[in-house]
Length: 372
Image 1 (tube, helix red, strand yellow):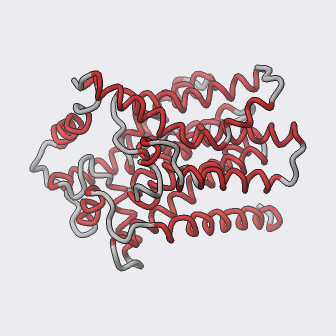
Image 2: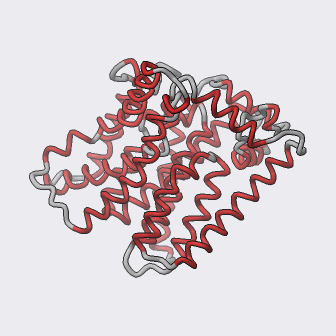
Image 3: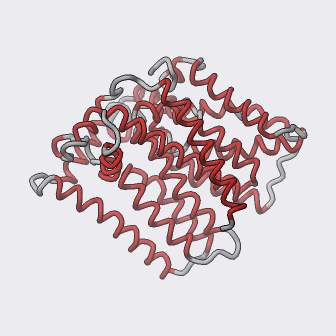
């Protein structure tokens, strides 16, 4: 890569890091926000999922990353905040790159702007940073998945998809289940041979085994990890999921939470959709829609029917909505000849910031500065 091409990328990365830091650090809570955060703080000294340091399933790669950051930060509050800033920046940059490849430069920029100050993404970055890795893991897997379906691509992006999935699972294990449909769709769409699928699964298994063995070693073999994880999942899910025995009222409440917490950020861009006179579904657009659907729907359905207890638990699906929003806004900019593009990006940032500080309703308030 030449210096001329490298310089804009470095400048864009620096600007994203600066904007993420400027929007997180001043509004971050002074103390650890969730009880889960206390568990992670204990894990900085002793990693033991059996003792809920942290809670199951342990999130070993997140704990390892926070321990590295602790080498230069003093307090757990600062450690987790810096972790959230770095992970948020990485997720935004990956979505920017994905949007640029799928829809063009304007779409990538606007998708990044939508994600930076999405209310749930913003809140997760300052309160429960491990959930930012839902967004980071999803975008890290979606980028090689899309590269694999682009014409003329060799096997490398397809294989990289499995490695990204295994690493993402070390931060948020549930992401493996949520992204399997995207993996299978990519394999079917690219018509890769069975041998490539087997190689990918082997790489996924090796990546999973690395952090699973570390987690098992941390328990010293004294407990049954699978049993701990299952009991913990039942404790989390049975109060709100009909699948785990919750009543109709609790299940309906969780369903509406999934809609609101996934969809609040959509208000920042859905207004632009009616300005398009035609939405012709050509083969290229059909491929885009299939990709977004197979990414978004499994994560949304999980949050709607299995579990969502906090807004930032929707972050596996929200980047897909931001990507769709970036494409819609880019078409609006093109159709209305709005110049410069930065004007629309700033408007998007302002609209999402308004949703964060002035939430539209009771459920949206849970993903707002008021909650913090």
